[in-house]
Amino acid sequence: MERRLIGSVSEQERDEIRTLFERKNGLNELFKVLDAENEALYNKLVADMSVTATKFQSWWDEKAQKYQWDSLPDHRWEIDFDTCEIFLVKR
Image (cartoon, rainbow, N blue to C red):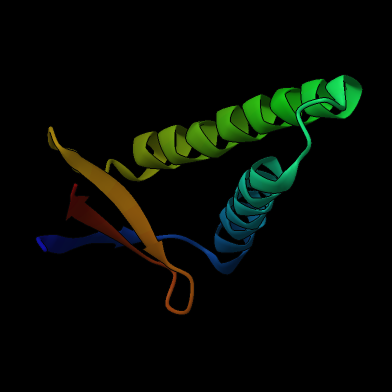
């Protein structure tokens, strides 16, 4: 796996993306076990997943612009939550 260090973020910024990351993962897990017949809950979950995914991507876009991170086709940014380091990783 190709992985290159391209920068870092503050602990506060790390905490922001960690919260969104954990929420996104939790919603995905809930989606797997949700009974689709519960239409009201299903629709609420789908809407929440959409809002969370948008916030998650916006965080990455804002920090990439702020810190001028490199980007390449077929790559994504990844954070090490322990060190606050940002890596460019080949998909």
